[in-house]
Amino acid sequence: MLKDMGNQSYIWSSFSGFLAWLGDQNNLMVLSLIVGIVTALVNAYSKCAEGKALKRDEQRKDEIHTLTVQRLKQGLRVSHDE
Image (tube, rainbow, N blue to C red; front, side, top):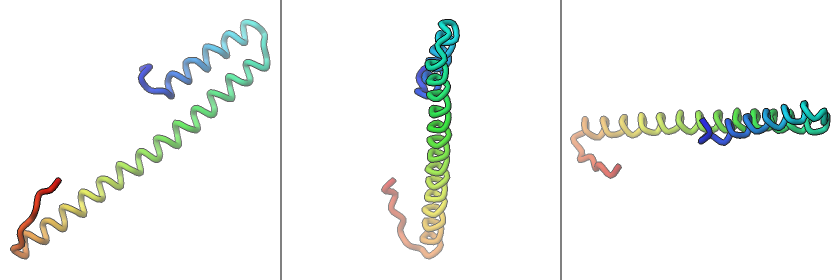
């Protein structure tokens, strides 16, 4: 759970927000909320970019497979460099 930097940020942001609430420090509470929101936005962007990369990788593998099948149907040799 703590290996993901996003989860760590959420935990520490919540913890600092709780401590600020106990100490009645409004500025620290707002800062803690801002850190949590920024973390959520960065995580969402990161997951979106990761999803796009995985989708492109799958498309690339499908293209390679299609080209390999075409070459085999034509009777050409196929190199297995991957």
